[in-house]
Length: 354
Image (cartoon, rainbow, N blue to C red; front, side, top):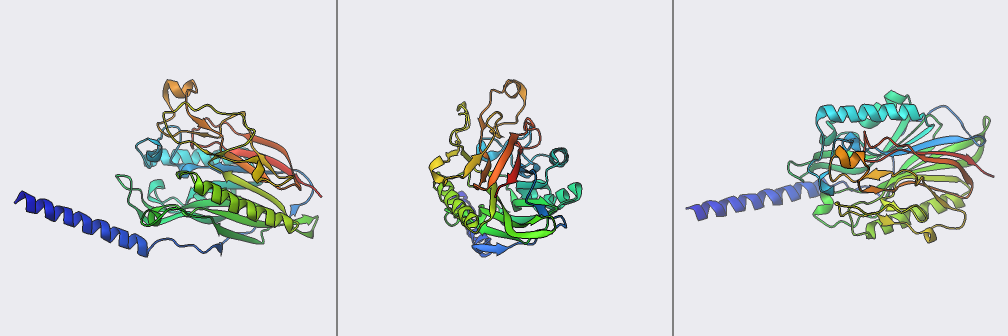
């Protein structure tokens, strides 16, 4: 009798798993290679002269602040309490207000997800900072069945904000190396390319500032990072060859060549990939600040004596790439002590060169 019950139970589980795989396959997010995304344009003209500012920040869906860990890094959790999630997000918005940058790149911004209590973080940032934004999905799944309890529905991605006149905003798919069935509930990485006309007073110069916001692969064997970086660089160079000014920023999940090395102290086993200087053409540069880590391990909440004494696994994986006709006058990692996210914001000041 017990054997029959066990067999029936196992069959029921297999049927449920097969049914879930079927549903996820039917509703799998399948973006086109390039897609127009909705955007709101401002009424300010981006001027070719002067110093301009940009900040890039992986906000970790307002779920990975100081008191949180993450299951994929050896922690236990997917989301914090509702109260803590709201506190993190309020801190993120207030930090962005304090930074007061003309242009904002956000990564891991949720628009409708169980893990962030269905708060549309893009719309909330627009309201709080009185800016216009565009958004591209990098994660869209009706139900993520892992871990336990499951992550549930996720709609998340990268968002770019400013009050400048915008001509277009497009989502560009990056290579996805995950295979079926894991692919159906996994990320579909991308970059968001926003074209801003450059003006001299009220006269358009015919050139564009091309802003590229991205978040490259994290949990892979390294090959996806390489292929995604290659595709990203190909696009950046193409835009520059059209006579445009190009700045790309975000979370590389890779360390920078020439940066101060951060020692591996564990216990998390995850290590970033490594960017190569040789991947850049002459005149192109990576822009980063290695005086402060840009990211911390989420194997445990960032509290206690180990955090206080900075006895932690840190990373430097957030920054920018700029074309030869862009001059960077300042790049600074803003040390928020990982209170609101497992990443720090990276602030950039730049000017355009003839």
